[in-house]
Image (cartoon, rainbow, N blue to C red; front, side, top):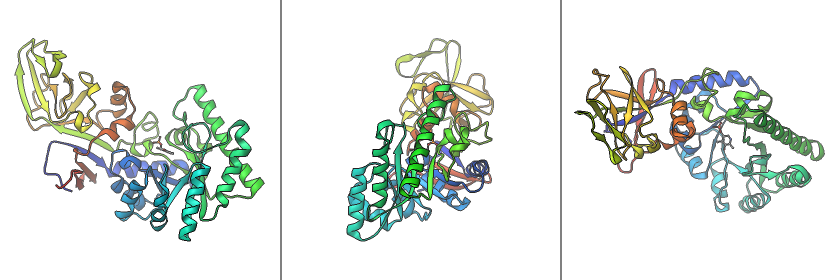
Amino acid sequence: MKSTLRRTWAEIDLDALEHNYRTLRARIGVGVKFLGVVKADAYGHGSVQVGRKLEKLGADYLAVSSIDEAVELRENGIVLPILILGHTPKDQVKKLIEMHITQAVTCKAKALEYSKEASRIGKNLRVHIKVDTGMSRLGYLCDGEGFENGVDGIVEACRLPGLEAEGIFTHFALSDTDDPHGVEYTKKQFSLFTSVIRETEEKWGQKFALRHCANTGAVANYPETFLDMVRPGLLLYGYGEYAEPLGLKPVMSVRTTVSTIKIYPEGTPISYGGTYVTDKTTRVGVLPIGYADGYLRCLSNKWHMMTEDGAVRQVGRICMDMCMVDLTDCPNVEVGSELEVFGTENSINEMAETAGTIPYEITCAVSKRVPRKYMAGGEVQEEELLLRGL
Ligand SMILES: *Cc1c(COP(=O)(O)O)cnc(C)c1O
């Protein structure tokens, strides 16, 4: 849907996305497939637009967290293989098969359910087996004394009627830390993963076409883990500590405009709670962005926005729909001027750190009230507002 508001918006730079994709492709080399993670509406960037772009660029696979997210892609014409990383209720197996969606199988109970449903329909469900090598979330446990049992479970799942085991994967818990413990832990996870694969292949003759484990941290730090396919999310969008060293560009910029400017004398409390009191005559700008747009309230009095005259401090509590900035030193900034909340000028990594969180949470938090503008070649290609009935 088209937005009629010119208030606060997110620009999604499809050229930056393309650049990141190509840069990562060059990094992983030929022979390694590329799965783009587009769960959670592509980390807030818009899964349909990102999915379409990746499909056009030649990505091999997409991944989402649920069947609803997968169906959204299919209904918008995306034909790339899609892997669902989370659980799907068994009554949805028919839909998975009809829509050519690949499902993760994370334990024996799920394998049996999926097999039964697929057999009942008389068709095959394509699956990737998930191994828990130390994330302690989903997947077959194969650690220590559980090794044989885990491998048996995996082999059993692969041989169940109605299941076609195309892939096997695991997920790293500490691949994005450089400290020795993280490195040791990641290597241990990888070594367990390769042992599980070796055992299933050598002892049981079970081959997997797609063995994958490399998330963002591993794509940046552990080339030995690339195997048949890599699975980055954050890097694709150009954030996190590894993005810049790898030459990647931030894809999203959130921008807003000045709606009102007022001059207050020294000693004036600004916004709820009066947490900021002017220490001089202050030219205050009101911005139409608040925590309901995803501008986290915990950043109150802590973050700055970028203007054509440089950075301006955000002052006072961030409200639901608005916040204030000190424009005293920026006489050129007027009502209607644009400011960048985060993006190419104003680092999201720094913003996340200031908020005590990670860039993932910042882009996922950009709410549906914020229209997305898809940019390519400096032009708006598409605008979308995710509100009902507009
Ligand atoms: C989210 C997710 C990814 C991508 O993680 P990034 O850190 O964004 O690269 C990869 N694999 C699985 C299983 C995930 O859940």
